[in-house]
Length: 328
Image (cartoon, rainbow, N blue to C red):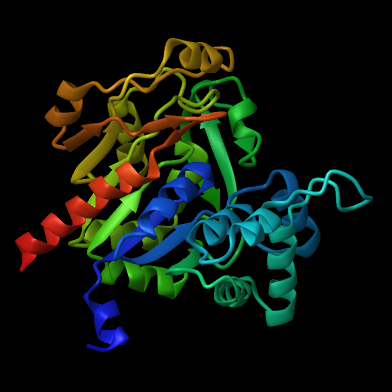
């Protein structure tokens, strides 16, 4: 059997989001026999990404870089090098080497999407990594008191509950490759990640959202383990789902994957000092709204809480396999 034929037989999964949580999950998923396409937010405007976005007029590379590294089939030392962040040097301090390489590839190839594609080949990425759009998006938020906040990095600092987020330009075109990947997907996976600044911005790209709604793929939401100060204070699992529904206007997901493993008291205390706490699974409300729930112990604790990539990817793969079998 040819390699091409084997590739065709792999379930096609589209993963949408951004941030650290997405990268952690992808490290587990790339070990499964899946054809992965990651669609990544381009709304970041802080730190190294914000500087490169402003000075070079390019989409922010940070989240794309993290996903490329997560899916790369390279030596750990090379991954560490790409994550390396300069801490001194005029003009260099704060930049990660991976971001600078993406900026260089964009300049060499003539556009950001081609630059991502070229770096993907260099890193032997397992799957495809696509920006949600070929241009940078400006993310804005309206708080409950009517204040408008501009910029992804400013939204969590507002100190007010978020009523809604929106993007400019509102009619931004997604990459045709991204739309096509969604149309052909057997599974669409959204999250984990910052709800209002990493997840929902992708769903506000009009044609992306419509393609997801129309897709017959199994649709899965991976809920964050902890609330995020300034974004999802006191949010339950159903609150996360309600926020997505409010922005998209559709019941988007078939399944919700959540952590129900106990978080040690000392870890909870550490997060409480930062204004975060465990996302409560209000199971009755989630199921009343028509979502099927997969709950398991899904966290590991090192410096910070992270999803257990192996266990999480096991549940995702099982869901996809079961869905495919029912379709046959």
